[in-house]
Length: 233
Image (tube, rainbow, N blue to C red; front, top):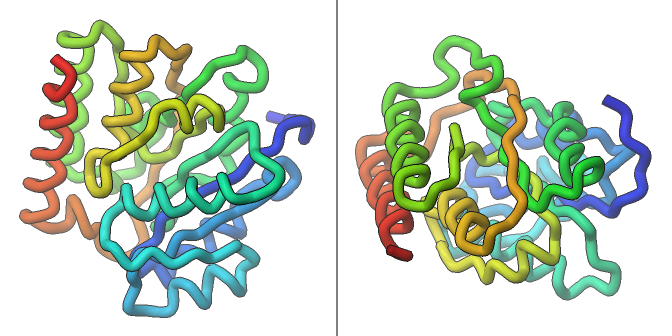
């Protein structure tokens, strides 16, 4: 899909110990439609920051551990800039997504005036071993509960997503760790934003997952997701 660069698009990439993958992610992002790539180094103990900077990204440092902390750091940085973006894209640093599919993710915003677009791994092509059984079950449970309790149907809580910048600010995002994605989708439902999903491809990540790769991470992520789902009832 070809998109003309008529919108200012900023990509925010939270990164924790992703020195082996982050450059691949940055290099695969279509530079012809993206204005800025921000990597938020989330207290990494490896060379993530140096690798990301060498690959051409703006690198920020967030020492407080947590996916939400890193995302908020990126948003705060954008708010301080003189020229504000039209669209924010969130993308993981582990190279499990296909950054070259970014035009597919932003297209509904540009072409159909959607507010939030979720890249759905459930609807897309997943390579074997790319999603763990606990991730599959967790997504299934969370999206079913959201549909039942809020009347909005999602198929995934995927991290590859795009949102209008002003709509993102209006959400006043709060979660600092594992509940970031579900908080955004729930607030979109509560605020009656125009949302949609697009199929995205998914492959096994480089390295190991700090969330689904450990029992503790899986349990904590599940707890945070469920707590956000029931928070607004």
